Image (cartoon, rainbow, N blue to C red; front, side):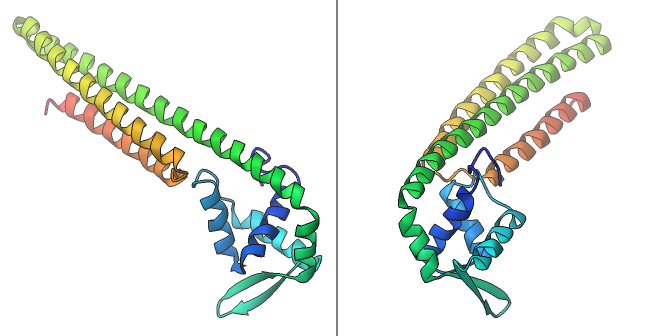
Length: 206
């Protein structure tokens, strides 16, 4: 459990409330939590199953085999505990709203940092290309600089347009609660690959 997401004991109660809606197996509970956080927080199996075991020991849930899966269901004692802690659940829901907003802000910050890094790498690649052109063809320095500056301006314009459109779309996804951590991972991987391709193209003169 991440303390930044759930306070002590709150994940246990929240799992019980999810089972109060319907019976689920472990993966479904993990997915249900991920959905509530719009993919910004996905608990591990090592976080969920020990708490389910504790709930079973306390007689608040039962588990039954359904093929290769284990299905967890709330008991009457579990429903009684939920009824007695309704105010606590309301407080947890409020905390989760704050956590989702905070995690979404962190995602946006990560995306902004990646875009700034990409822009700096493109500018550095353009400067390196200008330096190589100067060393190889002294008599064409001025012409090479003019072309490089023009291309740098085009590259920066493309980066700015990409940044604006992507940032707008990511903010919309975050507002809808649909911005998943896999999207951020894909963005980081894609930007790293793009940076390498740009630098490789500049160095090879292609």
